[in-house]
Image 1 (cartoon, rainbow, N blue to C red):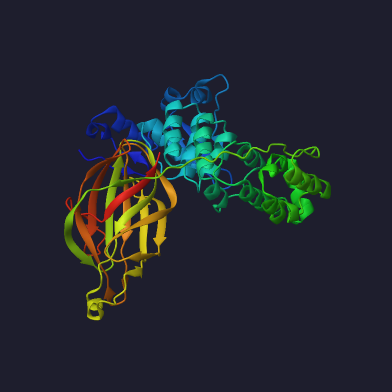
Image 2 (image 1 turned 45 degrees about the horizontal axis):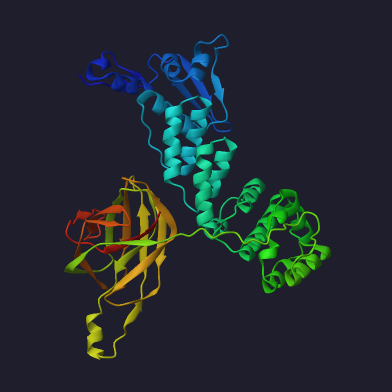
Length: 458
């Protein structure tokens, strides 16, 4: 018997086509059949959701109190601190036990809602999604969000990324860093940034903070916001050389003449009493070593030569969680026309290749345009625009777009390479595909590949 839905209501006997309780409850989610509670969700642009008290109360003690407690709400329930799209995902989980998250922002919103309504299993799913997607470009936003909702399990993984990729984190265009986050970062005893570079980053932060507060970014105002945040007292000026101090802090305008004089004497002569509020540590911060490894595939022989604007896809899976920072690929073959000028034909050329990393759902995690000078008929390592976390036993895709220049095409080799390799205790699996005719449909080619190796750290 077919099931029809008209105006949000099911026709009779719809239950007969559903094989299990989950299917029947999921059907109720998308209709108003038997609904007995209403939510107005959102603030300025709200949506109305109809639901079922019994189903909500069976999943959450908060919903139980709202629906059946002594102070149960009788009218439409207003939810103005959750976005409609987030509330829709929340209901999807309650009715089906499954969700599909598509972004860090979305996962954060659902995590907040899951904590509000006491849904710990949903919280764990959101938390794992955020942990899987921490990168230098979003780690500050995740860290500050986690602090705001007291999600302590996210803080240390975020801080680990911030310590390892300090320069990338502080130079990534993003929302303005809060004073508390800046101070937390400056409290770290090990960062991958020199103290002079750190001071320059702090000055840039002070300028942005002034603009955020509607103040002119004068030297005096920058000093004011740095002192108020507690950032200036956390800079280890005594680890700088005299040259570094003279080229940076001394002329920055954020130090008083007394502080400049005392610091200069201390750097020249050693022990000197510093003014109150200055950092007395002369011990440099440690550097967090990020060791990069190559997992290279065994090369057997060149299989075919391809040309034109091709899209090549390599699916990669690792049995341990790693940070992938680059890929190594084959370079072009020497153009046939160059042989007419032998032996003077060039040894290298300017590559122009696009490399993207996609997650299992096809969402782009990182896009890199590689335009460096490389040698013909060899291997080139493409450093990703930012490292991407590959979670253990999850599949990711490396998409490469090989260029063509007008009527001129460039030849690249596809080679017989191994499908499974192990490096430093991590096993990688590779599966190669190619979009040969430009239709976007990737044909599986188990025996030929273009990605020679992945570069990773642990």
